[in-house]
Length: 198
Image 1 (cartoon, one colour):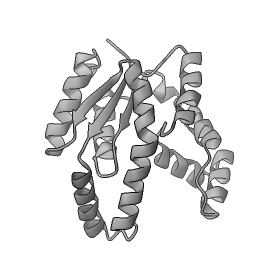
Image 2 (cartoon, helix red, strand yellow):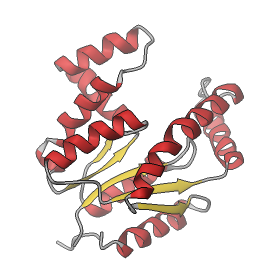
Image 3 (cartoon, one colour):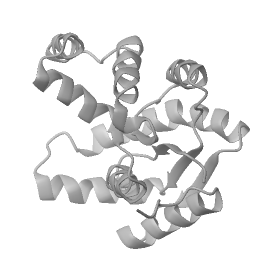
Image 4 (cartoon, helix red, strand yellow):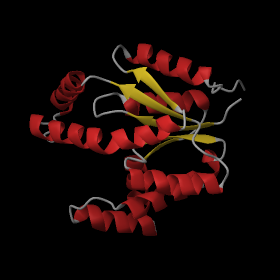
């Protein structure tokens, strides 16, 4: 069986966070979301967390070097030894190089990249629905368009790198949660990545 060292990629509103957690649970590997890892380090008051908090409090973005350090620290934990699912990292070419260096050093490269494909109009519609349900003021038309533009400009190049390695599975992200989940499971199974039966 192929080890599940996965990355899930998709625009805001693609459902990647929700699907990532479901896939991780199915495969019994941790879902490693950079946002969650940042928050965990901050709440636990770790040295890395204190650095992140100071940067975020100043209204700045966490730099690639620190993000990479925090992700490496998380992937070095025992529960990630048999695999993991990354969500939100790497998100640019510099972070890809950093992750490659770490994983190649362990002889454990990524085995698959799940790209959730959702038309721009559908992403915008879903984010608008979420904003209304959760009262998120940051999900306005202008900020949504800006985030999608950043995704398209920064994430497209990393997908080309992974496509060159033949590890990207494009999955149609339109449909019910269960329909999309089923497509992801089928794509992974075609690579020999399946749930382990206890």
